[in-house]
Image (cartoon, rainbow, N blue to C red; front, side):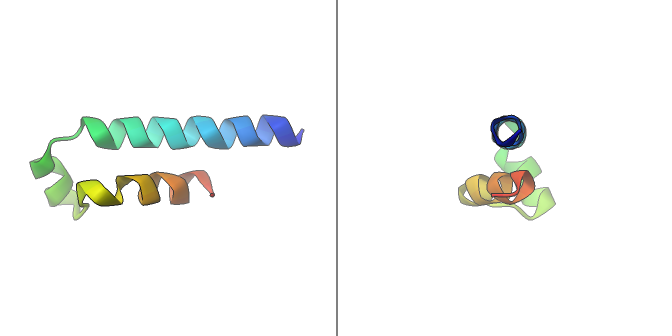
Length: 48
């Protein structure tokens, strides 16, 4: 069960990270996100 939860968290991290990385700098700026913050935001979203 713990392995499954870890996998789901990892998938959520990768999905969030990928979606944010695909945004342009202008789109990120509109959201109030710096490109350097993407990793931390993705980790928070996944529960790390």
